[in-house]
Length: 404
Image (cartoon, rainbow, N blue to C red; front, side, top):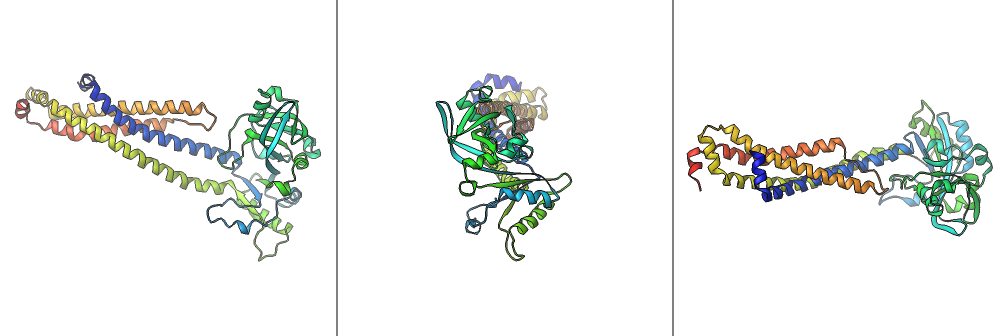
């Protein structure tokens, strides 16, 4: 009977659905966006290594009150500092040296690309940071040790110069006029949401070759990556690194460190606070939309009860109990809200399809959000329809039958 009434009043049903659809769409779209963003950021954090310490000139705890003047005169990390770290830091496993320099020109025959980034790395970088290869390989031992003129191309570069990754393999390109042979191509990844590195726009070369193109002491910000050995904690690693670095820099006991030991776990600790606030804001925005949709459903249900007062009186006169009348209108309200919720979820799904067609980040409508959307729809339907349904169930049959 509830479904039949909804089918008879198609325009009213549509207008009721519209309000709750917008409400559910808002709440699930916001939660899906924040959950997807959080998942992608946390994946980025994990890919950078939760057991890796970055030795750099600048600390990562920036902000509007960042005291840059304290750090501007600090010395830059040196490639030669890796040997003492390997020999003296027992909790250190793998280590690598790296620097990047933007604004480079990459050429192949008559084609070229401006504004690319040169990324020079030492031997174990691929074992600390995962590189997804489309074709080819990472640098071999001798290529690293001798500074061979070989390169690995990011997706934007091999796509722009060659079209396909296989066509790029073995070709001789020029980076700022310096020739090198392509030995690998990377899969498309997109810019990192954490450290800002965009491998798609990078040409990766061995460090000793990269320094012949760019003087990293003047035109780059080099850093050392140190991965904790199995069984060692990041805290142990940082304590040992601090002692060795202070010894190499000949710092007195009372002098402050002239280097920064940055770790991904520090970023991870702030993520809970950030996404907690984002989710709270999303719930507030969606809550207002749901309230509007709920009032719309309640208003329609009041009108429905008013129109069907005679019918309610007849049903009660021939023996319909209060709970039957109550359930009829509650079901009608719940069916409206659940249909609106399904339409809202469908809109969110269509948005995920559109967003995922671009290579920004993975946008996923999870089963938890689907269940949440339907649950919220049902609860809104019960709350919005209860008072009209209760009033309908309490009507006196004689008075209801006589009403106009």
